[in-house]
Length: 493
Image 1 (spheres, rainbow, N blue to C red):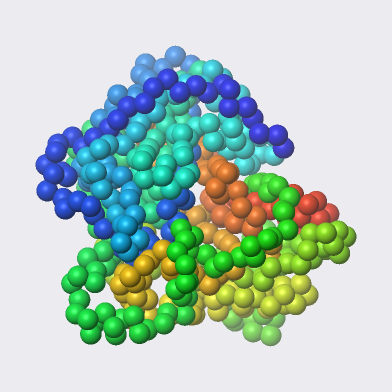
Image 2 (image 1 turned 120 degrees about the vertical axis):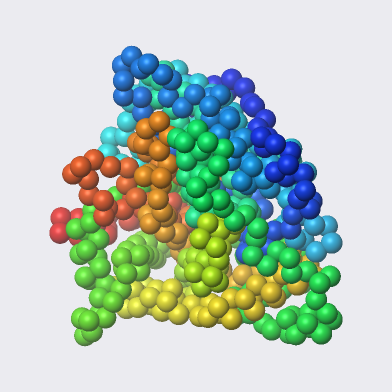
């Protein structure tokens, strides 16, 4: 599928938005240190989502989401999230991420599209983001993915795009360093609340200070530091040389890989139920497996077989990397964090699933591996384990050397569950969004990096249990998977 042209969208200007009053940020100690949970994210990775709002009236009395009103609400939002008005910097001494230059402001880009929103339709009935200008990328604010760029530009930006019909798209982006997806959607919900109420106050203010951000080598004794650093967390280690990447080093001379192609695959609630039944151990019918575990097992099983089959057909693709599986776990509850905790609160759970189990083992066996990995993760089983690991990170003298042992490569699989987030109901401005979706960006279009999303169908007869799988794979792997009739064998269940 070819990507729709971005030429119909033009940026008309950029506004710098600041807090409504200096009092909201003037007394903040600058720079604001981020915490060890924020350290686990690469600095150049954003969270970026497009929210589309349709103008259904042929002759509307009022403009949909007026730019001036949105600007005023963004300014009020910064009073509750004042650190977002600053700029990211990396501490030169120990590599701790920090927010400096607080009060500098965020950006609101004003853009127009010469086409109507309903002119961009998908023939498949799902994955509508792929039919929008630039496959949705043209609806996001400009972004420089270099370390210099993310430290120079705002950590939070919105592009407001008005279509010829009066419909509006809000392309919202934050740096992942300051929040995870949970915090991101909270931020947008808070913006929508301020817009709807016309007030400058939120019914429930957020908590934006990062967990353990106050823990530094300057406020512990030498004995306390020694005790913390003597612990070796199972999920992390310290590399001998500095790097901006958290991942384990890979082969310095890998075989050049084919392009990655992103698609949206929709599964109905009936198909998901059938997959879940197939992923249940027949000898233990009372055992429990989640939809997430069952679907992850089903997809990884077929992707792995397609990857192996490709190498049988074309040995030039080389051997597969280790079959490591990764998924983020939200630790807000385990750590007892405040209800509206905004910063990152994800720990990465990963492990290896034996290749022979993935290739020929029954689906329930693969699901059992994933169940154990997500329910009994190494190093994350208790609050004590998590806190010890985070303190170990916080007191490392050179945080740029911290690594996670997950081995990304041609055999790995990474998945995030977004389908449980309130992406639609809580993000109503004048009207409810007709589409909420992350586009495939040059940063997110990674072979084997998947997301589960809720579908955009909010109608009375909608299948609210359906899931869209955001599925990027190496192009030749798609060719093999497309010929695998077993991959969608539960479609007509």
